[in-house]
Amino acid sequence: MNDVIPPYALAMTTERSFWLKTAAFILLIAVCATGGYARSGGRLLEPVTDRDFYDDGNPREEEVILGNLLFFDKELSGNRNISCATCHHSLTGTGDGLSLPVGEGGRGLGMTRDNGSGPDAVHERIPRNAPPVFNLGAREFFRMFHDGRVQPDPSQPSGFQSPAGDDLPSGLDNVLAVQAMFPVTSGAEMAGQPGENLIADASAAGDLAGPNGVWGLLAQRLRAIPAYIDLFKAAYPNEIHDGSEITYVHAANAIAAFEADAWRADNSPFDRFLRGDRDCMSVEQRKGMRLFYGKAKCSTCHSGAFQTDSEFHAIAMPQIGPGKGVGTDGHDDFGREMVTGEVSDRYSFRTPSLRNIALTPPYGHGGAYGTLEGVVRHHLNPIESLHAYDISQAMMPSRADLDAIDFVVQNDPTRRKAIADASELEPVRLREREISDLISFLLALTDPASMDLRHDVPPAVPSGLPLYE
Image (cartoon, rainbow, N blue to C red; front, top):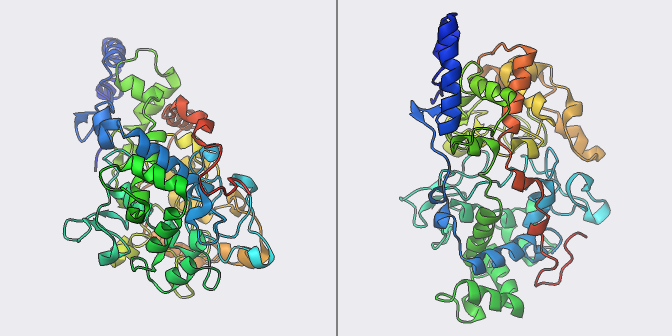
């Protein structure tokens, strides 16, 4: 594990000498001037640079333009009624503002999105929170999804471990592109239900990579739109000379290029601090930083420049929603265990990055906490917080037949105890002033450019489908 120790912390806490305190204060000024405050694994944290991102932070414009349009185009869904952007929108912090996404069949955007009704009602709630997309173009993020089921694997023909196994095509640029292959294959997310369309039928049959599989059918749709043919040719001039050469791998690579370019966020006050800005953070934020990398032990897991170790931890997070089809009634979610098969990984989930954390509620793999303060307090005393969890904190549109299953696990003392027993976190005692300072530091992880992303939304998409209906 990586602990970060401020260079003057020992002087401040082990001696009461006036001169040592004075020396510590002088060192604080010098540290803020040089950017050398935080340490990870005993090393000073380096500020993020272009080299930390795919394409050295300079993706090809034509590929980004194509990916932008594909990301917002409902043509990629089975029933042409939902896009990638529906659950990861610029106007909702690259998430959707809900605890659990309302997928295929829903209507509206963000907090106004509902579960639909009648034949257009959603089939089920999506079981995990829609994670934000900020900085996923950084090479450091080598695992995708809450359970890390996508990651590099040289032993695989595609070069990646994924739920598709050997069916995953070759030619994918990175793990972010691999991630983009999967929402379109999910009946609850984008494909729809069997009998509604050919893509949904292929998804239900487990046919992903065949000639009439999910990815092939989506490529056929794109080949039928003249504007997309021109866009793909411009984005991949050495690979695509006519529409017949378009594959869904090209689409996934373009979507990843757009996400990496549009949602890079590395100019927060914390970033500027690491780069040597003297006046980058307030006194409260600097105090919170010292707590984060010291007494509060946040950096044990939230380490590195992006505040994540990319590992998996059980922290007694309340489980809400329909579950992942495991346990006695299918309503449990065993997290990383569902990838590794190891019981020791039960209830463990990937450590999320904390960049732009103030912009991305709700928090937790199930979106259990609607406020930053709520999830911070959970981390400080996770087991007590789990047992005292107030279900009104969940942010989900109501529908009676779905509401009944949302809190089955949380309301079951036996299963709640199992989640508590797996927790790795020990309680940390902080004064109220310290909690306030800690939250102030988390606010300093916000890139101001990420607070208004309206310019990422295209005015129209090549399919001609509406963006918001």
